[in-house]
Image (cartoon, rainbow, N blue to C red; front, side, top):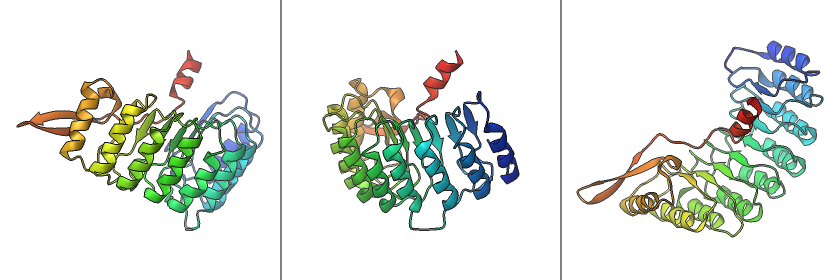
Length: 289
């Protein structure tokens, strides 16, 4: 990552990996390979049947290369983790979301998908949700630092009610507010929801939404990790999360807040725990040993 590899370097890598049968992970994030470099990699992945992890965040991708990679994922059966975060997209029509949604309907191998800093709006979230409802392999969905509001997260909540495979969702640094948090809470408490980890930090959520999430945490056994820092932590919220932590329902290392008292009032302080960045970390470690 961040090795100043550009288009020519990506082309050379793509050529060498066409027949490679040993490399499992390719991390090119931060290298400005641009549209053409990503197109070379997409062509390579049409024939490479070994690579399991591909990171192309902050690589100056275009809409065209995003669509090419998405089309490749329709037929690729070996990639398990893909990071396409922070491309350079100048169209507001979010065509890439339509293609990603179509890909999710037919792809049965992808476990982890990172779509941070895409500029995704509620329209893009709605398109993506259409594919997520029919996908049965994805476990980790990273949507941090987008422009999803309450209307977009309502579609994601509907996915959680109908599709039990998603286990980790990162919605940090969006703007779902109270109504969006309530939609998520209803989905989390829904029978059959298997969500285990959720980040809604920095989403302009106030007391109603945060209390709704706290109550849902009591109802949902699978949910063990929740991250809320950067929202409006009024005293009722502080009290609710203190009770969750002191009762043992929420372990201190599985959230990003810690309760303390001053003059009989409860407050929450930030602790530097965060959502795990990869679902497949344990799998990679197991392969190494």
